[in-house]
Length: 321
Image (cartoon, rainbow, N blue to C red):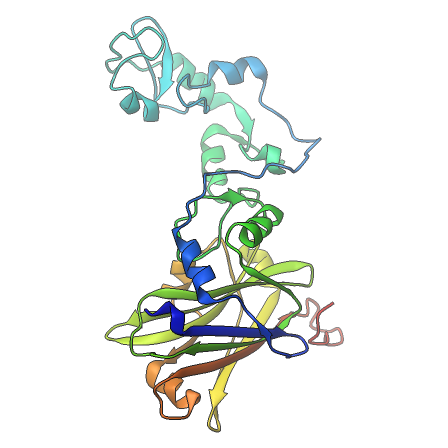
């Protein structure tokens, strides 16, 4: 895709257009690699840490994570977890003796009888579980870190929402706006040369929350399409409290999409592949663009509002608070 031919402008709330950084800024950032980092700044004075002696007894000497059955040991009694057994090539990391297939059944019994806090207790999770229930809970824990929502890159950064907002702004140079309405214009001189590409990611702050607006082009079957969708920077149960609409049109015609934003727990690719957003076929996009249909000029407008929690109460105005 000829990225020099794409122009993006945006406005929010007042619908007055302002320049948006050139697409080069967005696509070039796709090549940035960032080291894995976890934001851990949530104080939890009431969280219960594991009992020190038992926790140390169950700590794998290689990965330092707590060990779950099967727990392996060497002939000298040194233990390690099953995951690390393969990583050390069947050699005890403590005494370098061959490990074999000896299980430490006594320690496994101890592990099965324990109740331990979620491993995200230092991020705010107050829950305590038996060993096996703990494993299952941690895969869906609401306090687990979020992956970076930036599309089009393999960014490995994880963290809480405030940290990721700062990361998106400073490292990915994402545009940040305050307000719950938007008006974006997407321009491309040669729409027939379409590759899978994220054209824009914009973050909106409204109702005390953050939302990611994506717009991109990709191949759907043999034909290119354009798609816009919104993701909520938080968990799915919180995302259900909000609704958004997107509208695109021209030449007396328009398409409207309305839905609930998906949580950033769902990857950008999953949302896109589910077609959960406003999808514009190329022929329709060119029709909306007018002129000689040789240049793409799409204007996408939209708004975000909060759903009324009490159906008997008076309607909530569709404005930001």
